[in-house]
Length: 555
Image 1 (cartoon, rainbow, N blue to C red):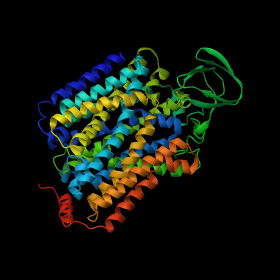
Image 2: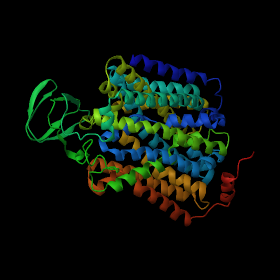
Image 3: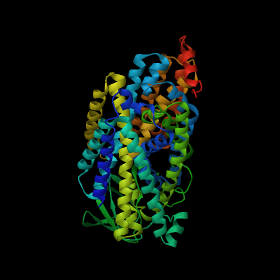
Image 4: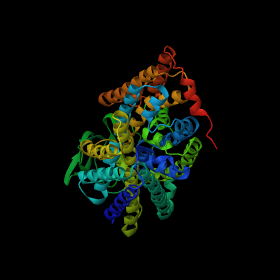
């Protein structure tokens, strides 16, 4: 049944894309839907596009893995739209640009800066898009048993064909439809699961018990290579072979399945995951990220800066405000989006707490991203569990499709409009080619951590486009050289720091600053942009450009 629902969802997505063919005649139609999208429809589309795999599956999984401090992620995601509402939405729409690189050229008069911005779009979109396709493949494998590559190919083809057929207009209707679907299929099952849960389970949600012993025979299917530390001898079954684990360190290989008996003591995590809190434990309940680490407050601020400021710099979100009729409509879109996202994220708390109580073993296997679709089988059984799993799977797949459409649109615009200006036909072909190119990347990155990869995209966006937009929209003195210097510094430092952090695997404060560098790369980019611009010549037309960005819309 799950497979059939996913097929229907894919067909509806492609049919909506085909519906947009007749209305798409120009580049403006493809990229910004002719700027006629109403605030309510646009806000629903923005929300559908924004609520990706990281939101639908990742946040609940992070609550299991990192504790209640992980709820700072949705706070940052939603706060980004408040900043967008105050600083970006209306003046960005008044710029008249079709893309973020187009805005850079219109504001600062530099064609080379536009090309560089297009390359940054490609980096951000790739970092964000590949994990979506990976998660789609993993989800289909989990719920239907098909090979991973089948899910990846099907997902890539669906978004590529839909976008090539209908462009932004098709993406808007698909994303708005899928937001309504996600809200229904995410909040509905959460309420249903709470009603099915008995009084004891609902009581445990308030204060989840510490995961120190297995309460029943529990299989742990390791997704990645994992180091474990056993405190007492235990008999386990490893891929069907009974094995005795002596006290000490042990290594579980990726794709192995270990069956722990009821009553056995839960092994501790070793290696670079040793600092993760035990689900339900004292550190888990602390309201900061990385509570078991040496600098939890620093980690929390780093994530908040990356998610809130990164939202302002995501190219596939920024382009949404260009589809509004005017600046006032763009501002209304941002305001409505805040309310829609806040409503959706309430359900993540329910799933995170349910997962901590019912599937705490997922923190051992590094499979917390699958908690939501695993939960129905732990609360109930039979047909009810099957229906709930199907609903949640359809909602999760809708999340992948909606976000992937927006990212693919931004990627196609950067390649076929900003790097090499062209017409509608090349935009369509680029959408198909880009979706085809993402498939092999997703096949090679099957082990990627979806949440970590998405956070890295936010970090790069916060370190590059956020300073460009804030200063470009609000400071007359920004120059092309200043923007260039700041963006290069932000891009190199953010990507280099995250790469170095992954390679070295350091802990403590140094590890946080390397793996989550937004706390220092964003101020660095702002500082360099301002310093270089102050020593440069401001064009005479800069003031007139700024006036156009901030003059009230005509009635």
